[in-house]
Image (cartoon, rainbow, N blue to C red):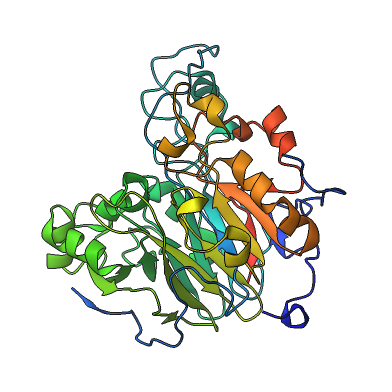
Length: 385
């Protein structure tokens, strides 16, 4: 997109997080039941990774192996039971146009991570403000009253509760239509297990659209308990392929983009969400940036916000592992790769899908300070489209 066609530089209020100010810019560069394509239409060929046809925003939530904490030891006091997860909070005021709300920011195992007693996890168990939900986004369209999720995580109960202010829940009983649709990225546990709560035993939705790749749709249709959701019409499966664009309400469109990643059960998608003024590109999981057919700065040309894979900060979390064996880009690599672009353009880069071992989860850590000029996503943060 020519520079003259790009939106004006970011101002306070475009990205909102409970009244927080925009991320400060560094004064210098960083030094280190199937049907085709829901609601129907193929309106633009976006190609396998290119996002230059619009001005997209990149929201990538990334998946991690369920490994240990890199040898971290527990310092927080132990207890036999943990209090319930802290609620997701958000700003009390809402944009008047379509926006994306962050409802989860950590890897599939959560924070605290399942069965882990490292310092980070024990701290989160005893300090509710340090807990985080599994990575997910909500797409909110106020004019039409529609709400969509990107990925159905194991934390979907809390994440639906975090959307009551924009959804308007039915009072005094179960809301059988808490969403207007779900876009799935792939078949790793943090990204689709929440579908189970839509079934007869829980919410019992009827005909809820779920957009997924043909391979993902086939996996859900042919394997229980997901196949029961299809058989009972709790969900309907809309097949997506790169190049198809789902036109939603309020001038919003969602485009799937193929992403390289471990594809044991289904292939993997990123989503580019384009609104009337700005765009968001969401990639929950990806292999190293070298696996992409396009250099990352080039792939993000014209992007307003980039929410990138922040699973691990550095190899220090993975003693004995070679960087090429990790299957995710390190934050430290992304900082080096994107520093010049962030310094010289209006692009805002945020990290999400952080593993419980990632020191950048601690706002007081040296690693968090090293991300100056970039940012770490927070739950409740909103991006106007």
